[in-house]
Structure formats: C-alpha cells, structure tokens
Image (cartoon, rainbow, N blue to C red):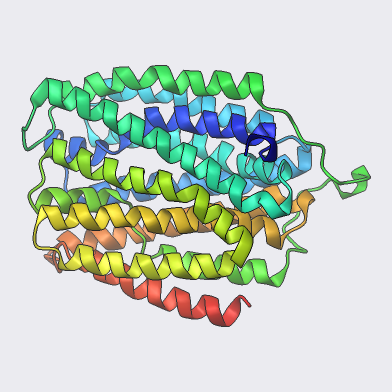
Length: 397
C-alpha cells in the first residue's frame, strides 16, 4: 500500500493522528467538565459547541478560497494546526463557561484555517481512483489518534478518580497538561514534512477569489448535507446521554474507545469501497445507519445500550467522513477545490449552531418550557437523516 499512497497523505495522516491524540483526550471530557465541574446547563453546552463550530465554518469558507487564490495549501494548514496547539493549554486555567467558550472558539478558528486547505492538499496529492483510499486512510489515522488520546485520558481518570461518577477539576487539569506534547509534535511533522502541490492553472488570469462556476451537483450535495447536519447535533449530547443513562466517567471513556476502534478499523476499507462502487452508494448507506443508530440512542434504557449503539456509530463515521470529502473533490476542478471544501465545511459548521441549540432546547427546554426530554434530539436527528437520504437520491444523480 505504501507505494500507492503519496507522501503528503502520509504526512497529513501522521499530523492528524498526533493532533487528535491531544484534542480527543480534552474535548470528549469537556461536556463533563462543563456540567460536572462548572455546573452549566445542557443548553449552554449546545451554545458553546454551536458557536465554536459556526466561527470555524466561516473561516473554513475564507481559508479554502484563499488557498486557491494564493496557490498555497501548506502554509494555511500549518498556521491552523499551530493556533490550536497554542490555545489548548489554557483550558488548565478555565474557571467559567465563558473561559471554555473562548478557548474552544480559538481552537475552532485554528481548525477553520486548516481544514479546507488540508483537504484540498490531500485531494491535489492523490489520483482520482485512489482518492477514497487516501481520505479513508487520513480518517483512520485521525481516529486512531482519537483512540490513543482516549486511552491516555482513561488512564489519567483511572489513576486520579477511579470509578467516580463525575469528572473532577484536578483530573481534567492533568489531562490538559498531557495533551500539550502531541499537539506540538503534530505541527512540527506537518511543517517539516508536507510538500506544496502545483495546481493545474496555466496562467495568473484565473487567480481570483470566486464561488461561481461550481457544478450544480456540488450545490445540490451541499444543500442535502446542510439539511442532514441540522439533525446532527454535537456528539457532546451523546456523552451526556450516556451519563444520564448511568455510565460513569471511566465507562464513558470506554464507550468512546469502542467508537474510535470501530471507526479506525473500517475507515480505510470504506474509502476503498467508495472507489469501487461509488461515493453515492456509500454515503446513502452511512446516513441510513446514522438514522437507525439515533433511534437507538432515543430508545435506550441503559448505559450499556448507549455504549453498544455508540460503537456502531463508528460505522456511520467510517462510511461517510472520507467518502464525503472525496465526493467533493470528484465534483469540482482542481483549481477550485479549496473554495469547494470551504463551502462544504462552512455549510456543515453553520448548520451545527442551530443543530446543537435545537438539541439542547429539545432536551432541557428554554425559558418557561421544560423541553421534551433526553430522547427528543435523537428522534429529531433520525427523521432529518431519512429526509436527507430521500433528497440525495432525488437531487444528486
């Protein structure tokens, strides 16, 4: 396989592996830190996640188009990873949800800067018939990093508070300190190892920021993805659902490890499958799996059932994350890939704010309304997944 995978794919995969070791050990515990330590309401968790993803999305839109204009993907990618690495240690000092929002916001700014140029660089570096494999490998490395980060976080939790039902501030601070090392290693690997790819543009007359000229199939796909995302609230709500159904902190981390193990194992084969049978079929299958799993989250009576469904949830991610990115590259010319990825990530991220706010309100209510309970956000997500599948079949042929 090594001869089939370009150099940049390996470097970007290693960078994502290291970065996710850092990110996942922190951000999967963040909802528990907010609720257990800072005592915030569930709706505030949705607000923080939604606002953070929204600003990231707006920046993804600009950074993707800028990478087309500058004909330079690497520099923006390095800047984005670097900013996220610099701000994460500040969570050690967080003593209010506003502080957490500021750190989460800045981290997402970094992700916003890097995501579109990185995906464009990955696509530029890979032949079309291996694009699914390349994105699948990158997603697998990303998730293997998440798995490793969660193992480290679980060890810290086990050593600090064993089977305690709620997360403590001291434990979270220890995890924050450990997360610094892989974050900075990832930036170093990227800065020293990645290579810029020359675009196919033959003259500078085309060097301008533009969003026109993209294929109508791309726009149709984008609309469907946005509709789907409105029902795909932050996974923080699944973590809180697991705790609400009886899992303690260490068990929640075990659940997350199961998810990431499934995702890591299946991501590369799923990418290869999308190369062979088409991205469309793989995406439809993934969204149907998502709808069934969200119905399971809604109906679950025990923490063990949430754990089981969250493990299968890794199958949805493996089928869709790499295939959707490869599908975007299939639909647009090379010189507009940064712009297209910017629009794609922006659409997903902008929908994340209302998605998380809706989920928080459905769960716990707002003002004088008490909400519909913990199952409601998951029923809502399942319904929108089904609608999205129908629209995808009809609109994106």
